[in-house]
Length: 131
Image 1 (cartoon, rainbow, N blue to C red):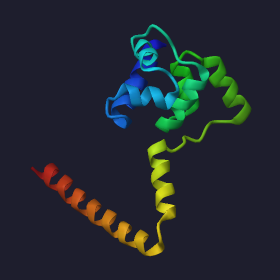
Image 2 (cartoon, one colour; image 1 turned 45 degrees about the horizontal axis):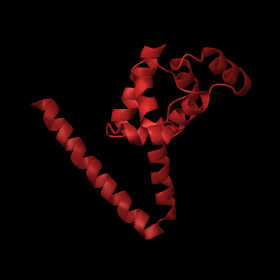
Image 3 (tube, rainbow, N blue to C red; image 1 turned 120 degrees about the vertical axis):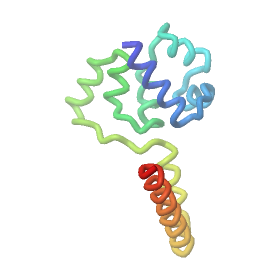
């Protein structure tokens, strides 16, 4: 149980919070010291913290609850509400909200820039694969 939660937390910590435990702790509503003890396997997360972790990481709440050893609750939630649709991580949701506030002409410019970046990235990947 603890190992799955620790792996999940480590992944979220590095992928989305740049390895900064204080930021992750704040996002899921625990103190940094409590998060450290959870990551050492001494404690688990509360249900509320698990749900916050699911929201900020974009992971299925049932998966997070199961990793935290709360399989019964995960099963009950799925039985009541069905299989969860994986939410967007908070940072992606924020990008969408910022996109929606842009004027149409600004959206067009940004879309063009994204297309250009994707083309450059695609060419770099092709060169790397052919080498």
